[in-house]
Length: 193
Image (cartoon, rainbow, N blue to C red; front, top):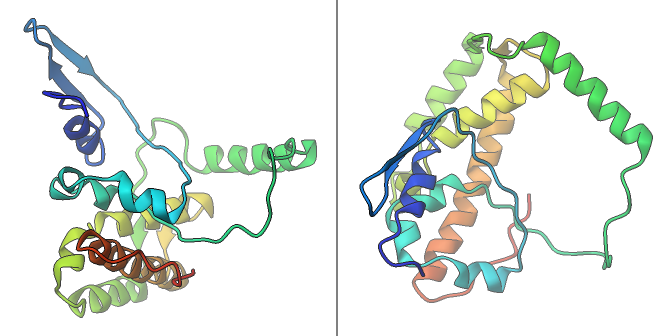
């Protein structure tokens, strides 16, 4: 653990904004602009249980993680190479997305009325417990945007909203298990998406 390090806090800030500033020990200010942070990882349930200290939870870092519980059904020493046709298909999809949402062009993705009603109903009726407070609903808005962009939609429809709500409900189960584990029991790997 690094003493006097503020890296965790700075990484946490990138969830809400795209710039950070850091003052070094010598007083120099470092600026990072237009930063977009994401990472992808995989670990066993046991490792995950031990990975994060209370400091991570206390500053809300866990709210920035999208956790998926899964079992391994095969053992591969290394993944196979990406097939050329699969890569071409992904590139084609990416090009369609880029044409729909041009780079550096501001796009506002709106709710269709029934989707907005569903979101409001779900949000208002959330059980207000410690887990709900910890799970930042910004994850929901980010997931809606990702789905809309991936599907080249300018609006969030009801079907998309139902998928987001299902995913957020799943995250609540996972976070509840993690919270329980923090308080001394094991993470329940029985929750499957």
